[in-house]
Image (cartoon, rainbow, N blue to C red; front, side):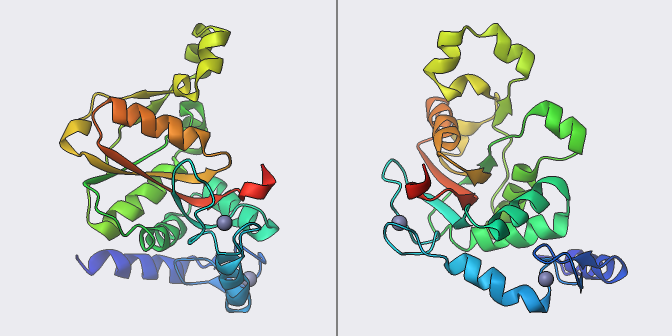
Amino acid sequence: MTRKKPDWQSLRLRLFPQPCVLCQNGACVTPMPICPDCADRFRALLREPCGVCSRPASECDCLKKQHLHALFWYRSPDSRRIVRSLKYRADRAEARALGELLASLCTGRYDAVTYVPRNRARVRQYGYDQARLLAQAVADRLELPLLDTLVSRSAVEQKLLSASQREKSMRGRYAVLPTAVALYPRLLLVDDVSTTGATLRACASLLRQAGARTVTLASLAKTPQSQK
Ligand SMILES: [Zn+2]
Ligand SMILES: [Zn+2]
């Protein structure tokens, strides 16, 4: 690990302080743009209880289909503010800070990190893919390679699929790139938000078909079970 990167980052933040994500006031010089006044609000978000088991999102296992590591619930206005900021502000320091927090939950053994790609038109529009930024931070923290394994089919390509094909599975929205998935049997699959979990599960299933042995799911925020 080199010291150079963090130095550049802190210099950049000192020159261009970011407004607080939660209150929009204050000039934050820390990677996670949350002002000192909102620090408690952020901690409260991380501790918000599940409506079913009362555990925080990071510890809840109510989604029986497959465990999903998540930092917080996608429910409160603050959770939406953070997700929106990651989506539209393109702040790499923020994505990095959130990715590192998410990585701290992912304590299993993995061979590589990958992500659910954003629609290509969106990537062109905004110039970046927030799930990839997040996944890169997770990969760096876990000292694992980041793999581009999936591609989002464009709307036009979607239209080529029949309605029944589309309905049959979310899988039609994604395709596996010819990357060496088989060389990395244990994958950690990252997304920014999971509402029903269907996208993550569909992508995990595609990756398993392509040769992955295990696919662990992780997202910044997830919708609580009771809200579905
Ligand atoms: Zn604030
Ligand atoms: Zn729960």
